[in-house]
Amino acid sequence: LAVIVQKYGGTSVGSLNRIEAVAENIIKTRQQGHQVVAVLSAMSGETNRLLAMAHSLDKQPSSRELDMLLSTGEQTSIALLAIALIQRGYSAVSLLAHQVGIYTDNHFGRARIKNIETKRLLQSLEQEQIVLVAGFQGVDSERNITTLGRGGSDTSAVAIAAALGASECQIFTDVDGIYNADPRIEPLARKIDFISFDEMLAMASLGAKVLHNRSVEYAMKHNLPIRVLSSFNQGEGTKVINKNDHDMPVNRQSVTSIVHHQHEIMLTITRANSSLPIIEICKILEENNIEIDMKNQVSHGVKQNSFCFTLHKNDQINALAILKLAPQINNTDEIKITEDVAKLSIVGYELKSQTGLADIIHTTLAQKNINIQLISSSDFYLSVIINEIDLIEGVHALHSIFNLALSD
Ligand code: ASP
Ligand code: MG
Image (cartoon, rainbow, N blue to C red; front, side, top):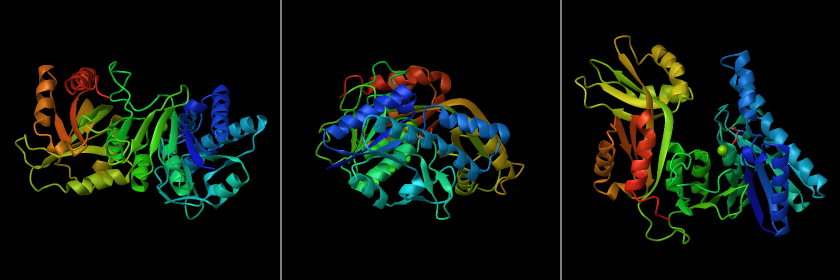
């Protein structure tokens, strides 16, 4: 029997009715002759509810205890699903990370999976059980419970699929696949049938919320295809595969999607004399769990030693507090905050060899009077920072200029 690893997200298990629907879906997979390991998220809203309770007791709750608390959401959903399956006459067992042996490092709130034991999983499968594993959690070498970061259940599922040697990892969610722009703001967005790991990783890192970016990194490393599917409707979904996979359509356009990320701010740090240890400052913020992006040396000003980067506006207060205390910053340095900006990106492949790409974007956005404040690129994306109010128009303009309404 082939093992299929499925992951069901928060909305897919968001109510008892939904949990029953997931039970039926798993039974269907089972009846097709597969063994099933299902990795679950917490019921939708639950992780936020737990987080809010902790924050109302302490603005900066202990990170160890926060992981202890947040991991309970997934415990509820796996147990409820096991109950629903057993009620339907199937043998099922729910397992927490420490029961499986999902070992991580000890970075609470953003732990990385180091190793997964397969013994317990295989034993249960051998006994014809449907195995339900709590996503998002792990255990460190001192047996503390850790969590993998928001959205981390995708990574749990991919890591389990890789450990079991499954042929793909199916991620069931509330959309029927990956779209070439956010369908909520781009009515002409189309579902993508196949996409490479590199492009998906760029999309996930640049703001597409469908997959946790570490899950894509993990899948890429193990060359394990991910299929993103709807748990509400039938369909083939989107398959994320190696760029050289024989399934990958030939003659794809080089720009494959438009991704955006809202609610960012831009920080510009200017220092009159010596050059700033940029990497050092980035490191301090990252060590404090603050994600920064679009790191740029600013060349258009009079003062040379300035650089800027973007971060989520929720991190603004924290970041400023950290920078004030940082030994690398002194009080003659100027920190300027630009609020209400957004990141607009094109994602594709072999973009570096596409001459004139930046020009097309400049011209297209300029025609709409959209001003580009920062630019950053790689072989798989080109991102610009613009005012948040221009975002929707910017998405439409780029989606149209790169013919994404027509592409496959
Ligand atoms: N329940 C966790 C969260 O909301 C993990 C997940 O759903 O993937 O972030
Ligand atoms: Mg998710």
